[in-house]
Amino acid sequence: MAMASTPKVVLGCIGFVVFWILAVFPAVPFLPIGRTAGSVLGALLMVIFQVLSPDQAYAAVDLPILGLLFGTMVVSVYLERADMFKYLGQLLSWRSRGGRDLLCRVSVITAITSALFTNDTCCVVLTEFVLKLCRQHNLPPQPFLLALASSANIGSSATPIGNPQNLVIALQSKISFGKFVVGLLPSMILGVLVNTLILLVLYWKLLSSEKDEEAVVQVEVSEEDVNSHRFSPTMLSHVGSPVDDLSLSEVNSESVYERNIGQIDVQRVESIITEVRDECVGSEGHHEGVSSRRSLKVNLQPIANGDNVRGIPLAEVLAGKEALRDKWKHIAWKTCVYLVTVGMLAALICGLNMSWSAIAAAIALVVLDFTDARPSLEKVSYSLLVFFSGMFITVDGFNKTGIPSALWDAVEPHAHINNALGLVILSVVIVVLSNLASNVPTVLLLGARVAASAAASGASVRKAWLILAWVSTVAGNLTLVGSAANLIVCEQARRTQFFGYHLSFWGHLKFGIPATLVVVSVGLPLIRS
Image (cartoon, rainbow, N blue to C red; front, side, top):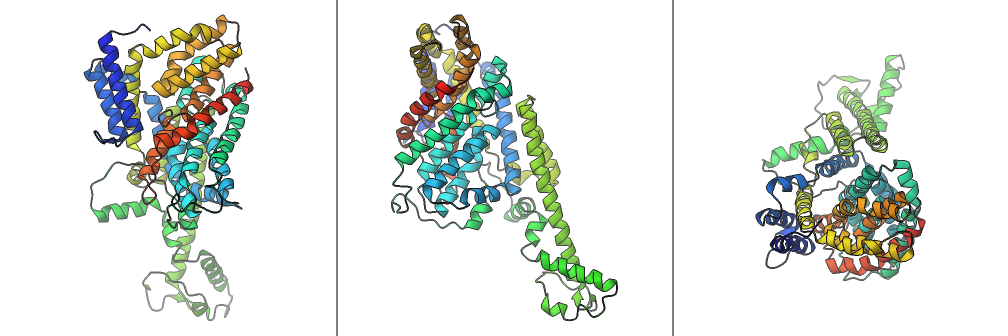
């Protein structure tokens, strides 16, 4: 792509710099409007400055990526209601041996999850949960948030569905799901291990048993609060009566079984029902004194003074049957949630349209829930979707200036993957562009060119595509704005109620530079063609 006219280049750079500054420093004194509004402002400047036409701006928004993110976030809401975090909390806390052990577990689980559910969705779901774990164990949040974001990026490199740029590469290169995984899985495994080791070295003292009192905010979090966690990303404000909101949230956030189970001991009810059934078949005298020994605290009015079976109030028996019925309904509903999720993953692996597969799974769960979906849909981070939309427009406008293309044209003759120096140069270019113009536009810009360059030099074209996938994904760990996953973790941590924590640009950079350089370097030799 040729360089645009000088006015367009200057104005396009101004729009991109405004977006970049507000993405890095969302509360700058001269314009403290936040990342989402800053993203929209950058997009608007691209249109006002006529770097992009309005039609080009709308076309720049990647709807499949937004649809995929929306669908997986809705699925994640229902997975949480199906006690996913209860099991995840048990897995992370089972025989935990302190902060270092917990950091390793967060890294490994995050990497695996991001490979299956995309790195962005993984960070949306897990950030608040990780913060609660940190507070519960009196640990500093920064190393765990860095482990979450960086492991999500590295883990997502192993599959075509792990992140948007891998999806673009898989579609353009026509590499099958299996070959993609085989080519990058060894690099991903080693990358996660090395990344975790770097975090342990950098934060060894903070993760020890003696905590820095200034580094850790003392907030008491019970184990029950962690296990019953419900993630709460930035959501649209809703104007309504408090009573209406409370009643709908009760109906949708917990099943009838979950509300009743605190009032009725199901095992005792089962024994009562069994005894009543035995009484009906002739077990005379078996239940004397049952009412006094097995009384239940059920908030029900007796339907009549004489309504009992051998001392057992009929109201208690009916309530017990209702609780048992609700218990099995809840188990069946949870099973459906997990089956739908597995079906979504199977559809993605089989190569079906990713965004529509995720949306179909989300709507299936909404229908199966058979209640008002508003409280669940309000947990979708719509501000994040708006941020992505503005980012797509802003980055596309920056690409229209011709600056990224000019950079590639200058280094292309020296960036061949069949020699060590050329591989290093190519990796540096990908890392720089991924942090300057975002990884998805970098892949769109360089993909065909890198493949053509590899073919011309006699190198493996498939390996060239996989190198592009690996480096552009891990490059997201370099800076806070290098990956959407980093921004998601930062925003979720800052806005989380009671546990707000700000991950600064420079705090991330101190870890990002060594981690990115080392992980990219150790992973490149393991990529298989």
